[in-house]
Length: 208
Length: 284
Image (cartoon, rainbow over all chains, first blue to last red; front, side, top):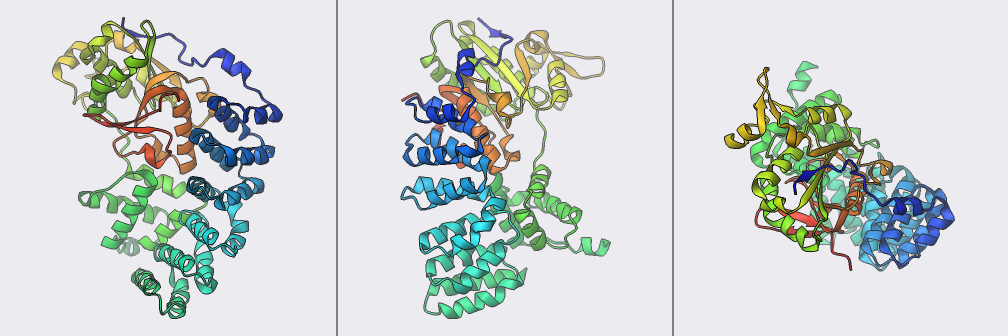
């Protein structure tokens, strides 16, 4: 026995490859199979089909296998169209923390697709959704991030939403945020954390 | 302009802010002792991109839609070199711990399959071949197939040629250098034909499903210091490729500054005596 070379490093079963369907309906059908490997492969291939978002979303909300969930999230991120973003927003409202966190991570990767709905999300009636949206801004590569955060601290009435935004402004804020941060301190004068966080953010901006 | 450049300084707060951000993004943590290294490269990137202070540059780099600058900064912050027996503790872990577990699910007559990606100029896959030959007695009883891949066809040719500088082989024990290498007329060291012939080098782009679809049924994968160059989505895709490529119970070794746990929760963390590695769970 020894180190050997078979000359065939790519050893996926030919049958496996041949059995992979190439059309949308067949792949959607495979999302419902009991074999997790087949569901995972189908999810990955569905990333090539813009029209697969409704089926991926349905499966995501009932899927229990983490590896298939991850494959669906990656597929939705790769598709990245408005339907995929809507699907991720649906996940933000999930009671399942793992689903919500995956959705936040996925949305961070889609700055251009998320930007058009950002104002709407930051005005959502559910404060938790607004906080999760601020979490998306944490790593969103978009030039409007600071302005969105300023809008939040200028008008949001929920202290936890404002607190999340202030923390982030401490990292990315510029002189434009100074006035709104001072106004926020006055608006929440009876909340020690807001006083502390806005003081820290202002200090960092002024020392920059 | 020269005066403006000379004025760029990285304050303690800037360093801490950058260090935290870079760690979150890449898993690379800079100790305070690396301060000069980090400052020098940060100032270089600030100059090249035309900014005149850290804060403006940091905001630009962090929110640039294309992500090109963070990639350039990552390249500047990483030392892209390799050598024989780099991070040797993982090879020790391979022969003393991981392969023992692999044998538990292998049937007699089955081949153990190891994938090393990226191959770079071959130091890693040949180090694995050397380690197996020298320090794993079970090699007498099992066939091992060693595949190594890279996206760069030129570097693959270099790997197949197997010629190395004194610097590349400096960590090898003299006995192994003598046993497995011959000195060339130019003063380089060329690895012996037996080991050159033992590694299958292939071109693979880890981000291309068409390239990776066929890579399956590996028992151990070495993928060290590669994912640090990827963005978050690409890392997740790479993790999926690795997951599909491994047999249930197989192991994935990342670089010492990398963490699979920050990419995906699909793998189990395994703490062995010599190294922390990740394992694809056994089939349910």
